[in-house]
Length: 265
Image (tube, rainbow, N blue to C red; front, side):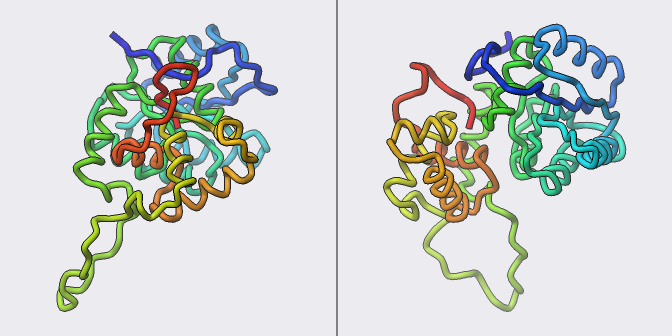
């Protein structure tokens, strides 16, 4: 049974149609996803379909040049020429505002970690219903990170075992230099101010900057500055990684949004 996704419903008012790019090496799946999405929600527009990662990178560039980059990409993992993880890495590096949801049949821990390190914004399995897929697209558009509970649990467990798994890889030290003297295993919660830890807890629950600002009685711009400081101090790429890091380090214990669990960031 497919697990439900948390987040606001499909009736949220959004001032523009959400542009989606579909990336899958199977034409039948691309066509099926397009029909499902467009039948489920006329506020979402499929602006293109790519057969592999290389095609996706090129299509995003063309759409961006035309002033219509996709807001959200549904990205398969295993594809010829370039896989979904590498395509995600390249697209997010060149177009950081484009959100990428990995959509795959593989509930694989290594794919999860590689995808997070590449900058993915969500990870769904292909057994998701049309309604769940639309909810995930809208969540990604809002800046959240849709993850099925089972997927989020695997990531948190992995991070608890390897606290530095999300940090950018560093070149190995020369053999002659010997091990670096350190008594710490990566950034710690103590590196953050009390306010930053509080905000990180809200991020772990899926709150966006506006919601955090309203909860803490501070401006949205102030929240944004705090989030930037958090990412810099923890050497993390984005809110997805911040949410997972917070959960792995027990910083998600504040009051849940809308009275329930939230799996976005």
